[in-house]
Image (cartoon, rainbow, N blue to C red; front, side, top):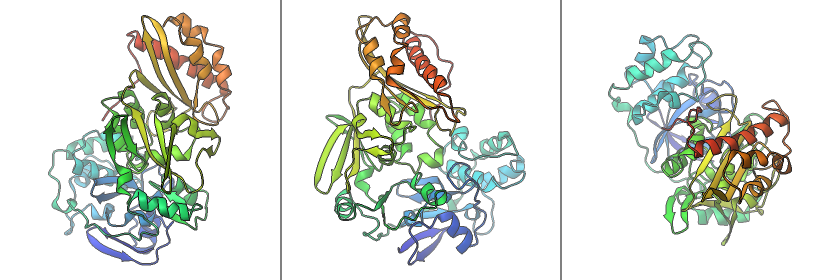
Length: 453
């Protein structure tokens, strides 16, 4: 593939690039820019963080799972480019020195880049911005102090850049959903790459050969969010950071869960369509969409169809998607209130759920008139708790009703035991989440932190 982009302010033109070559490997092996480190090589530790700028602005991304073709027409800055052209230190670099924010230094370049992106964007939510950067030496406190100290300093001129729009190879990166539909129908065995937060691991961890790729990041019409008569329509290419912003006023609990979805680097790359099409049984997003009764929009060529999103997940690794068919959008109904989403994991930030439950229970005159309850981590697919829903519907909205549904949980779910939780723990946690929903609905305070940006 042929690629044109900016690297630390300079134009780069590459020809015949291997589509699955990661930016991390290319920087270190071809350019000798070894400040960008390889730690986990799966998008968790943040040691490989780079700044990528396009018409959406500047974002922190993980170079280890960022394929080179995804850089077409963008600007990239590594830690070497955070300092000025004459060697001037960026404010966050000086603050890291002043506040002793580095010890062994392996993770420091990633922290500096994440801090510089937040500084550029005026983001003072340092705990959130740095949650995707792991450090084993400093205990984070001096790093956060450095970020706070740099926050009021002016943004250096060299950090403000916008790349010129460049044309990608349409055989690998279609420019619209129409072009994608035509291309994917002709090549149904191709692998679709949106954010590569999952596909990237196929390459870096599973060592898969992916001979035919179609990159979706230039399909602008898949990146649109719009209000329609049916509700909020979110294009499949919308990244999770934008989904969080779009829903945080209407569905704050959903947005609070997304805040814990990976890291800033992952949310800046991962797309809602890719998350749905992946079909992971431990994905946090589908349970919320199922509880919201969202509609999934699919497309193959010129043919379109739609379905309740819960019907898309058939079995482990199997979804109702035909060869050459792709997720085009998802619509959340305009009338969908009373949603609560609870994510249970060993770490608050950047951890896979043991259980993720989503609840939307309507109560009229003290009785449950409607219930939609869905879970991730409890079955081979994201799944509704239909037996529990039936057990509480029509009953008084009381603790007695919730406890009376105790046995119904085992009709809905037979979870596995694994390193995250035992089957018994998962069932008990799910039951307790319904109790929590009841208590919060009746006015009891929650002791679980929900942080919004």
